[in-house]
Length: 149
View (cartoon, rainbow, N blue to C red):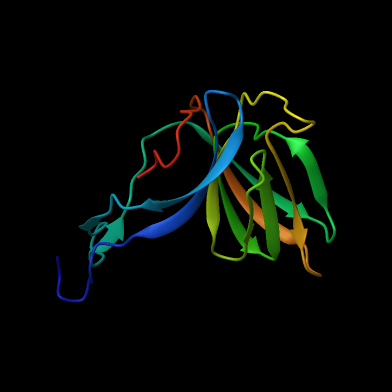
């Protein structure tokens, strides 16, 4: 560790996941597997390198008042809020809101319809569109919370 690097970071994120009964839930998780090293001639920085996989990046602009009724994520995906605010509600009734700089991992594939719910709902908050960047991974869903470290 260098003098100015500070302690090993802990970066929070929300994880939308499906349990064995097919019900979606949300868990507050933390990225903790950071290593301090430089890239090229740059000073050391904290890096958390996730397992390699193929991925597709999708930018989304959700209009003011947009609501996405019950649906599942199309693939396990990181969702980063670039601007605006949005909310996510899982089948267990948990509802979170996120704004710029906050992110989540959506992995609720394979939910079982229950009481008219399947996967999650989401929508915009406030008087500005929500601009999101998703990184869709080509990996199977894991089915347990907080497995990304």
